[in-house]
Each structure stands twice: as structure tokens, then as C-alpha cells.
Length: 407
Image (cartoon, rainbow, N blue to C red; front, side, top):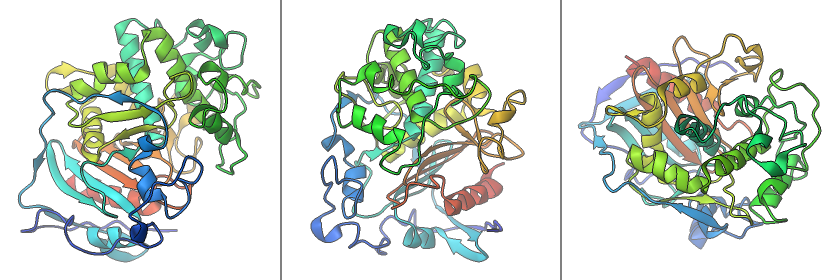
């Protein structure tokens, strides 16, 4: 599939398309006649429940609260707004066409503290908390960097078992944190979303509370098939192990550590939630829930390499290490790790002339970041298929934005 990216920018009198009145794709199929029901713990992933479930995941699964900042970071709406067009599959499209054809619940484009575009569909609005899915993995990695600065974690060359006694003697327990961060543990784990794979087993052991949770949710994955640090293999269990390390090292719940060290310091405007298992351990591989603008504030914090004004919230050197291609780690490069992306510390790296990276979650959740221009795109969606979380058309839109606004 080839695509040519074209962008034109023009000044408009309207501030955004949020109130355009156009119908979102397949509103009836996504549950509009029923008021967008969330379903149950076992039916949420089926239509017509996706819209309702992915904007109120914390009504389905237990959670811990992440309080907002006393004084949120201000975001200003650009006046007048900018019209953005791009080309995909040989066709010129604008943002309204994008929304008309893609099951998007929220779309936010920021350039530093200015909102260039903000829109919601399927009856969602700025108060809904959208499920992150695997975007939470990157947040977990940033907390590891903060814990390293705080001295709670001594070194990322320590093994997970040196912090979590229950993991001693297991494959994950004997894996250095460094290789968990890059999904390079070498431990066998299947993640193809078949319903019978290892990530489904992890889901049942955590969110569905099929077991005591905690370390026991990951100990069944105990067969190493490659030496650590040699091969990229996407495995949500590695993110869950990082969460166990965080809780043990900091001696507090991960959600509490997030609130104190990142969420409130970055200036979040709304309460977030993080889903937990039977042991009260956060599902750090998937399940933070937050409003669109706070995902945008997180993207801006990363665009500023962990700095807010003159205050370092995430260590700058850590953000750079997490989001920059490592020339010495060939197995993490684009085209080797995956066809389209490279990998850093629980973060997807885009092949580009300058640094670009993304937080990606299944069903279309994403935060794209271009640090040089302080450009951020936040996207939440209800795609019916699990695969292609970045979304080819979303990537085309992102590349167009960088081409037009990346200076």
C-alpha cells in the first residue's frame, strides 16, 4: 500500500469540528439506539458495547484513583483554528472525512500548549475517561525512570526478582529490568488476541480476577526461549512485571506513585483511574483511563523531554533513552523489531529523520509525539479489530501534521 502525504493549512473562522453534526461511522452498530451500553466484563469487547465500555472501563473493572493536579496546566485553543488535509491511498482528505470514515471517539491535536483541533464522536465529550490499553506501558516505563532517579530502583541492570521476592527463581525474575523495558526478555509469551493466547490468560488472571493476582499472574510464563537482550518479542507480561517491580521498589501502589510523581506535577485536569487485580496490583500492561486532554498533557510532557517549565518531572536523560533509537540494539530497530516501528523503553519509535515516537494501544488508542516541534496527536477509537493499533491512516495524518507543522 502506497500513500503520498500532502498537507495544506488555511485559517478558518470555526474553532473545531466537534459540533459539526456529522454522523460517526456505524453509530447504530456501536450502540447509539441503546444509549451506548458498556456491557459486562465478558461482553464489553463486542458491539454494541465498545463505545460505552472504552469510555467507562472503570465501571466494569475495579480500579484505583489517580487524583488531578490542584492547578491544571492551561491549554489554549488556537484562534482561528487551522484546517488540515492529507492524502491517503491517493485521495485528498480533511479531518472531517477522517472522522466520517474512522470509528474515532476522540481526536486532539496540540502544538505546545495550543489546541489546534479537538473533536469527539458517539456522544463522548471532554469528561469521558478513555481506556488507554497499551499506552499504559509507556507510562509504566516513565515511572521506572522516576523511581530510578528517586533511588527506589538501584539500577535497570538489576533483575526483577531482586525487588519482587515472589519472582525469584523464575524466568521473569531472573531477567534484568533493562530487557523487560525493551520487550527483550526472551521468555515465551504469545500475544495474538485469539482469546486462547497468553495475553488472554494474563487478562483473566488480572482484570477478571481468575486467581490471586500480583506476582502469581505472571509466574505461569516461565520458559525462556532466547537469551535476554537479543530478540524483540512483544509481551504484555513484561509490562506487568515492571509494575510489580515498581510497587515493591517504591512501597506504594503504582497509581499513587503516578499521581504524586507524574500526573499531578504535569498538571492533569481530571481524575484518572487505573484498573487493578485481586491483589490490588495495577494492570500496568493496559488499563489506565483518562480524559483526552490529560493524555495530551502527557504527550506534551514527553515532547519537552520530561520537563514542565523549569521543573524536571521525568528525568530528561531517561526520556531520551526511552524514545531514541539505540544503534547498539539492532533487534529494536524499525524493520527488525516490527515492519513499521522500532522500540525503546515500552515506547514505539517511528522511522524518521528526527525523533518521533508513539504510545500505542489496541483498537486505535495512540499518542504521537514530535519533540522538536512540540507537536502531539491524541487518538482514541473503537476499532473492531485488535491489530494495526497505530492505524495506517492515522499514521498518514500524523506524518502530514509533522510535515506541515514540524518546524
